[in-house]
Image (cartoon, rainbow, N blue to C red; front, side, top):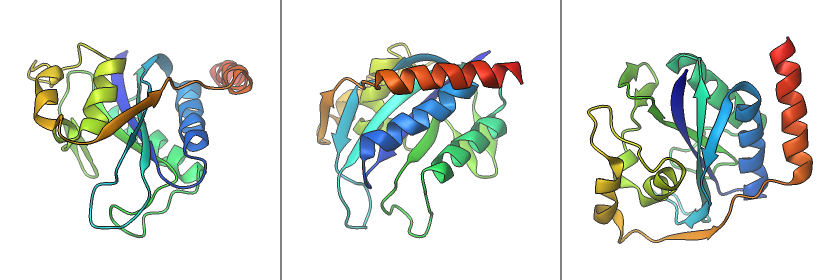
Length: 179
């Protein structure tokens, strides 16, 4: 089993519903370990758009990096994610932030995420969900937080997932394991 950290973001429609749905898809395939609170942040990049709702969830999985990426992309597509404009608005954005203590360089996938240490909206929830998270060389990620403290990110409260969704995910996970 390897521990993976996934960044969640949404700035279109019912943002929390998109994050909840993404969490449900991933939880049906992998073992959830922890999740952060929800954070609101301004968008990054040149495209004018609304604020993002962000979070991080940590899972354990036996899936390889390419398989992890495949599930992340499928979950995004299930929520109507399109990639028409770089840094444009997104229904659901899922980023593989860390894959255990490994560095991964594959076509379309770089881990740790290249912007991980530069973005407070990723670092703060990651450290909440996985306080001892570190780069593959052992450098603790908490040491990067002071450099991004000037970026406005607001903790908007716990990532509460409805009882109905939690029950549905447990059933889905049980069924998927039997197949």
